[in-house]
Length: 148
Image (cartoon, rainbow, N blue to C red; front, side):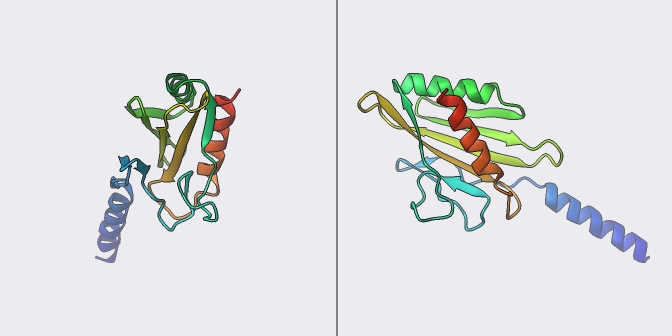
């Protein structure tokens, strides 16, 4: 009897852990969503003294050039899938290799000013509390690839 209860409890917990969590994504009033309190999120729109803050990406050229560069980097990335591809916004999902955790990555393109485009960025894990810096490292790697 105890074994059966334990089995059902484990199945329930497994299903809860695998259930899809609806992330807080997209652009509202020209801004990306705020990061949650957990450390598994970075955003260029966070306050500069916030642990979630990361510098935006600045690209020389037009908004179209910047968009094309971001898209090329995402399409060449392993386990990345572009979900939304609008002129001023891109949302992609990165899936971890082992546990299949999904991180949401967003890019919000500003208008070109003085031959440069500022791209606000956000990367957040859907589950868990800490990501051991994975989101920050990913966004810095994307920044380096874009600015090559």
